[in-house]
Image 1 (cartoon, rainbow, N blue to C red):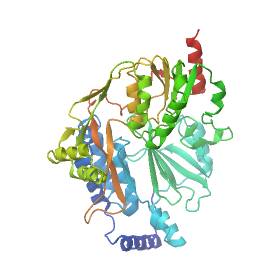
Image 2: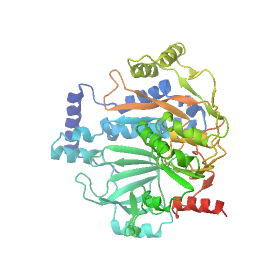
Image 3: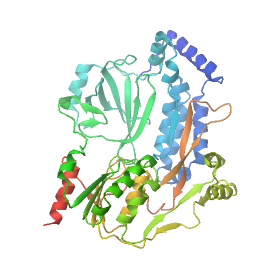
Image 4: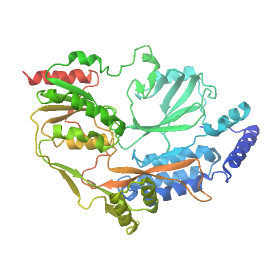
Length: 480
């Protein structure tokens, strides 16, 4: 792979860097120093740092960091393009609660002239020399299921294996109607992670980096990209939940739970109130958690009595006591007195650099006086996008004799939680990135991790058959 620079490009890029400096009144980004700053920020604040470094992937993380330091000295990764290296390091920790936030290069590029934009993007974009006809022939002969030509609604890219410490596959532009993109430029990258899934690095219209973990990859699709060979086929439609209302019968109730954000709590409350009488007599309840990325445990609290069959044990968490986390907690305190948080802050100040339990007891046990007879069977649909509080709900449900978990493995985003923010300070720190990090570690570790593989369902559902239809078939079979 070759990165092309011209004298004109270099001059305009230098002018752009000066422009950035004027706006932010600070020196241009030294990528190596920012990478070291990021590692220190993780070490001093992230609750999973030592666990990850001392665990099975510690050698890999250390080796990657050394490779990134070498790359950080090259021209390609200075200033806003440095985000690719920072993102690669944070992503390698494989914790969806810990990630970078940054202003992409497009933020400032919008203020440049068209000529300056074109030269800037030409300088920072990775390029591959390609011949469409030979690529098509090679893809036909390839035995690698991911290699091929893919399209979305605006772009066509060829995807092929290209392995280094940043990616395992790259998507290179064949055709596009995006103004600032050209044939031969790398538009996205895929890196296989420890779950044998793929992390996705995509560059937008103005070449700003977006990254996502554990995207959906199949023989016909890479996220929103579809193979040209099947582009005329209609994509599989999302579940039309309204149409399933026609299939509801007196024996089954259905509730979609796409999020546990606090804004969704009134929807759950309304469902339970409207169906209060039905819930006392209806044997089956379907809870559809597909796509639920979490939110607040308080949002699902009203559902627990319907799941409850015996005492429910919940493992607590431990805070890693750092000055930055303490400052975050202090900022979160409202004018209303929160005695628990104030006591927590006092305990943390006395234990800087150590772990302390959020609660004094290691286990929190839920004990209720009543076990509802109905619903007798609760079917909970889960997928790879169920994360955080959704996974906490699933662990609770797994302790119920009524509940059955169906679908596929969840995302694996629960071992480290309670997100706080770190912003760089001082001369090295720049205003174009900050870090969100998990400040607590679950006391389930190391015996019962969730993040490595996600939570396993009790029954895997087939992807080629409507999942709701499969559950209705299970319900029908239960009456035979």
